[in-house]
Image (cartoon, rainbow, N blue to C red; front, side, top):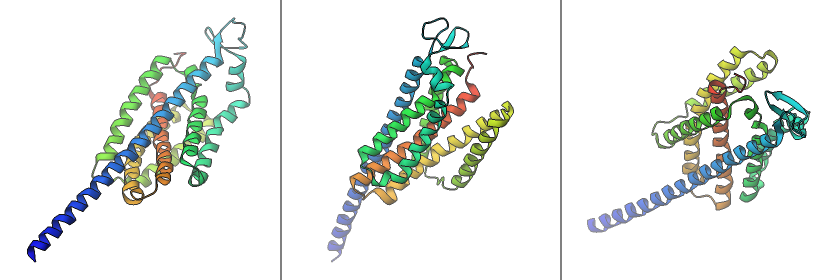
Length: 266
């Protein structure tokens, strides 16, 4: 009887280890798909930002120049439409509409459709962010991007590997995020450099914390809810996970750029 019990126990532990390996492999594939979608989204944003900027500016005195900006740089007609005309508000708020669409409709979408909407969102963000090339030197944008990428990678790795629960940070980070949004709206009217500096400092801390927090949350989301889900559900969840980390990265980059970026007119 004892031999039977021992054999059953060994069989049970073998099955448990096999299940654990399957879950671990599924988790790695899930997180890898999130990071892949996010990386493609960031690449799309960067490429679109550069393309829009190159189409929007020219040299002063060029046949297509319509409005001087500074030094030897002028806007083309396309640049005037994108950066000066009321169309700039459409470009600015269009990404918000896409986020709302994904948030409310993603569960009824095919994974491929959700991916397409996410990449469209990344492209619109790129068009919106193209103005940073007018404000900051290209070298400082590149430097801050690599600093942001390294910081994001380290923070996300910490969130994935740490055994410490980061759930307690969630409420404080959300309060900080709401505070940043409110302060940013107020500063649209005040145009205070001191308030903007404070927003940027707090923003770096908040989005650094959110990077680790969201990574751990995505990992737990798979372990405790998606490990047995169908492929379509996992695919849609991966897109939403990519959107979450994409937003953390882009906002971290923007806040660091506001702190450490060298302005073109300095």
